[in-house]
Image (cartoon, rainbow, N blue to C red; front, side):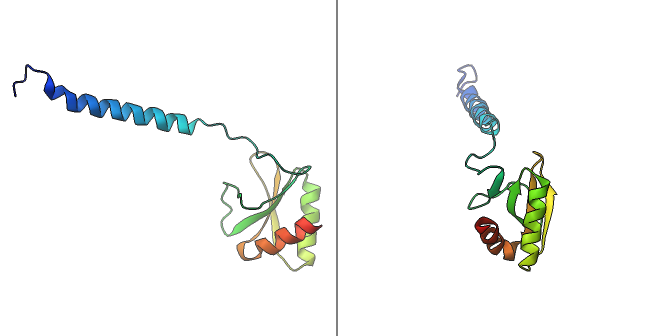
Length: 114
């Protein structure tokens, strides 16, 4: 094949076009707005199947509230049931009540029934 035909440019042009297309797709995927999840009742959220994206190590979130006083009440409730709990302030300013992973279902059940 003669180099004057221009066919030798087809492969690199397809590769550049494909990389550009994939770059645009991934760029668009990364710019999706992520807002607060609707459906939380009056400042208290009890996690169901949706978990938080934040990493708390061995701890899992049992409840999230807007007020630190409510988080303290939840911690006292869990403590009276024998469940060790602590709290952490999330990036959005809400307070997250954390328990160990093996106690999270029982903690959510207790918080949800109170």
